[in-house]
Length: 110
Ligand SMILES: [Cu+2]
Image (cartoon, rainbow, N blue to C red; front, side, top):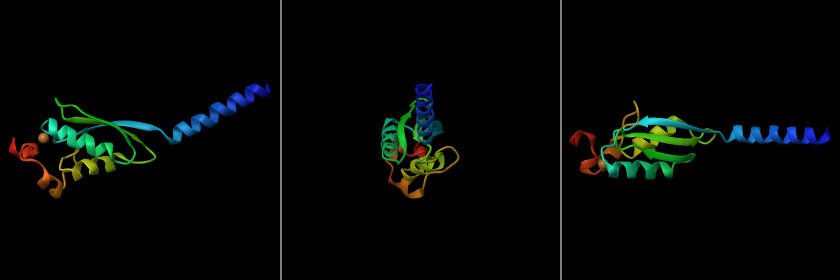
């Protein structure tokens, strides 16, 4: 009986820890146009706090991002993508970021 209680307590406390570190995965539509854009966005997200994985699909230009919900939010992730010059869902690229892009990576040049 005592063992059972210890086991239950262990399961309970570890599930609390897991809840605090829960990871969510979202899909964000970007204005990326080529392989270089993919690299830029994935590299940026790799250095974004709380992001654990990022993969941009070159057919759809949707980036799939996994992040720790206690460290960041989807708004922050969209903002990080905007900073490097790309639209993220309905959130537009910052002018500064967009100006720094290579000509081939600017969505208006296509
Ligand atoms: Cu590009």
